[in-house]
Length: 135
Figure (cartoon, rainbow, N blue to C red):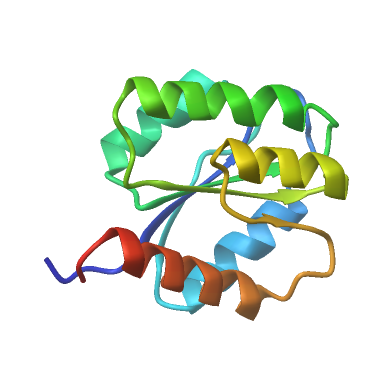
């Protein structure tokens, strides 16, 4: 199957700051990916349901609320329950380095901190999706 990489960009919880998520969504679209943005105040269950419906390759969670050690494990749990082993989970926002390392050990891909270039994010996604899918 030859199709663009499909990325779901999500904001989970009460975090209402979505400028970064919108910048990343635009940059990924400009890099040739299909991007679905869920909007604000999503639950992990809503994000997983949207990811399944949209048949995405990547779920990207933008988080600034400090709830990353709750949100990412819950999303991973739901992904495992739905056998979404080939879907890459990444994040961006304010996540301390120690917590980012713990999340990566749990199965989250890279956590992109403020200042990460949009090119590095797009390149990482393209590389990781190529490992999971045969495009």
